[in-house]
Amino acid sequence: MSITIPNLGSFPRTRLRRPRRDDWSRRLLAENTLTAADLIWPVFVIEGRSARQAVDSLPGVDRLSIDLLVEAAKEAFDLGIPAIALFPCVDPALKTPDAAEAANPDNLVCRTVQALKKALPDMGVICDVALDPFNSDGHDGLVRDGQILNDESVEVLCRQALVQAQAGCDVVAPSDMMDGRVAALRDTLDANDLDRVQICSYAAKYASAYYGPFRDALGSGGALKGDKKTYQMNPANSDEALREVALDIEEGADMIMVKPGLPYLDIIHRVKTTFGVPTLAYQVSGEYAMLKGAIDRGWLKGDLAIEETLMAFKRAGADAVLTYFAVEMAKMLKAR
Image (cartoon, rainbow, N blue to C red; front, side, top):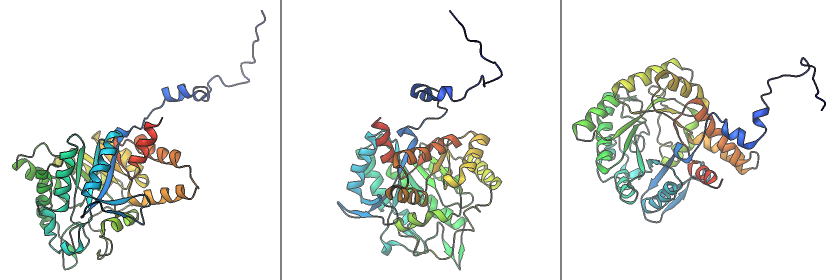
């Protein structure tokens, strides 16, 4: 039996392609995995019954009335999606400078929460805490003489979160970026025997150009006067995000959100490695619209592009991702 003795200096001993050759090996050695349990589905609710409105700037995304939203949520839950994030499209007649409708216990959000928890008690319901759906100025806080008020806004946000929690939501998610609101929310919830309700703080929310389609869906963009740069973060800043996160953790946040997503993977990574707390990312409307547009035109292969994008969040350190692709991605994962 002859044995070939190679020239040991003629080829590399370490071949990184070797474990990539077979599918089983690639799956076995994958450093990150994506499952339906990693996804949170953002949804838009409207008044009416059997009502569905397409969002032109978010192809494939519809505003749904409560009854249709409950049915859609059932499908999402059956696919393994553990939670939805609820955003209301409020009647313009109910939008006022004091955002009073936000604290109405019979508002659209509270009625939707009650319907969802009755139909799906085991599905997580996350409620946005911010005033832009209810504020005639389109801002996340109250406005006086062109200035966004901090402490006065926090008082209204606490009343808003309280009625949401009393309606049965599992998580309140302040996205307003007012200073001190996490501590105020925690104190308010605890004082009203709602200590079970979690807080997911949008701790690092940037003044981004990627929110346009969301504002179209919500109906707040046209009313917006000025910009949100005095309370949302400067996209140039990274260290500031860590200060914001540290404060919100100290104030009692259970989870941290970074928003937007893909342009801020470095922030997600820094937050996760620095604090080790549950860290969420939001693949925002502008990100979705760009990717969806390229997929619909055939420029990108949809299933691969969506999964690769969502995997990037996991690789950066996100524990979960809010994405309008949640149901589509869950279906693809289930079909495998």
